[in-house]
Image (cartoon, rainbow, N blue to C red; front, side):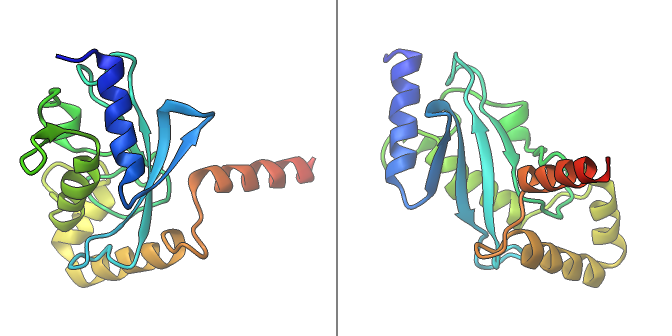
Length: 179
């Protein structure tokens, strides 16, 4: 069995060598952002989504922390913080949970190839982090779909993506100019 740090390094390297755009934060292999496209058959297909990944020091024995950087309208994702209500990641993580049957290994790539696409394809309004989105999805699905598409256009286009950090910087600049 390999050490946790070697496993982390291998998993991060596989992710960096994949088709996903990976940007480290402060040159750390424990903190980085990954961009991925929404699943083609989902309401989120027009978006390019940026997810911040933080690996704990004892990864893979402890789960990674994931949050969407750009705003997303989804019942199981907090629109403000980007936190993800994904039982697999939150409550059921194990070092072998992201096991890839094809390569006989477990790695971070599966989070972006399997788990997050499944979350976007099959929202669960029964266990919401975003109660408004869950309620709208159950009560008026057409309005829900339109709101999702509007968020995709506004927050998840590569040419005009607005992320939380940029919005916070703009808010800081605006408050400083008001003084």
